[in-house]
Image 1 (cartoon, rainbow, N blue to C red):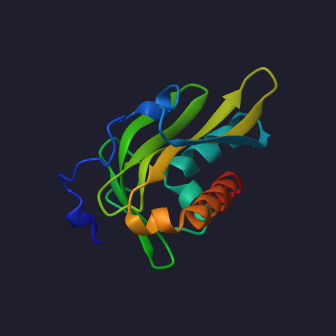
Image 2: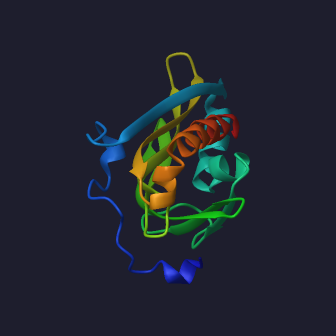
Image 3: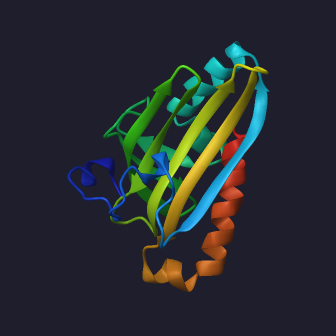
Length: 165
């Protein structure tokens, strides 16, 4: 799958942008966070890394994106071994104490849904948190057939995202 093939493709789910609020019903939900350090400098470093696809690359995934820095409309093909997962950035978080982006699945992705990658700075104690949030369901016959395995892989990769920063 090439990046040039993704232009104009629709999302594979209706609830575009829903990781910004309560997760929609009818999907598997995932939410996790971990402390990755302390101080404003650590937050800025991690935020820059997240926006440059760092959680994905740091988790061992191959990333081929239309932009160096995640932006609304950026298209990306994420790979793990022979599996390719096409996505498009649906929104960017750029707040004083939180930065990140969410992308949604496009046709050709084994799952259907959305995932948020972010870092958050807590000014009260200066802790820096890596955060992920997702909702998904199987999008192909083979991901349904491999359901227990694909669910396990999602949990494993999600832990790797959090450790990537």
